[in-house]
Image 1 (cartoon, each protein chain N blue to C red):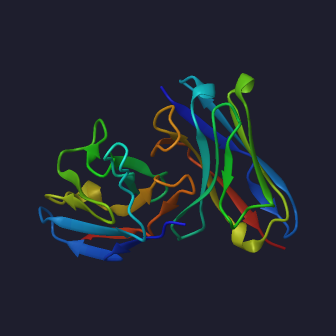
Image 2 (tube, chains in turn red, yellow; image 1 turned 45 degrees about the vertical axis):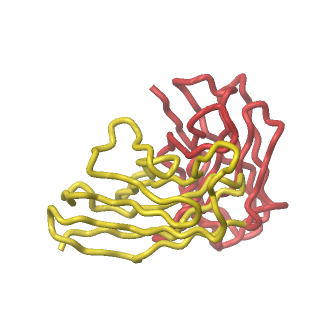
Amino acid sequence: QVQLVESGGGLVRPGGSLRLSCTASGFTFSDYYMSWIRQAPGKGLEWVSYIRGSGSNIYYADSVKGRFTISRDNAKNSLYLQMNSLRAEDTAVYYCARGESEAAQQPFDFWGQGTLVTVSS
Amino acid sequence: DIVLTQSPDSLALSLGERATINCKSSRSVLSTSNNKNYLAWYQQKPGQPPKLLISWASTRESGVPDRFSGSGSGTDFALTISSLQAEDVAVYYCQQYYSVLFSFGPGTKVEIK
């Protein structure tokens, strides 16, 4: 069965960096677009970033462009989010999610349980 | 960027009542090439990740009870729960995937009166 497991969250000071990981299993990881989506405490969902199966197409929300970098290692079935210059408003649960099929524009059919990132001094 | 709005912000209904949640897009999410609406609905219960209920505006995902249905086209959409059950208490989000700069609506909280 499809599983997505995030890790790497924690407490970091403003201006600091953190690298999130998402380990996938139960499907051919390299075939699927993957995204990071976040949810601030008590708030709604915000899409963060998106990467094609091959890693060749990448998109970011304006709120993180220039600070966050998405990447993947298909040999390790892993998705990453390098977060730099972190701000208090980046505090959120970060989910990785899979596009429903191998095409580009798909809803997110599987989500991990999320990892909490807290940016505070 | 495509902005989604939802109404109402919350609703409280009795068990068995019909619930309707609306989602309006700032731009059409209907593709003229394949006549599909790039609009999904998710259910999120406390402490859980979102669950995909409906894709392509009206296609129910496998295992989703048939009391959930989606409708609409272009810029105006709705999620209907035909007979509200206790386990349907959750926040519901619409999401567009017409643009790869994906976006979600702000959510509608559904409670039992």
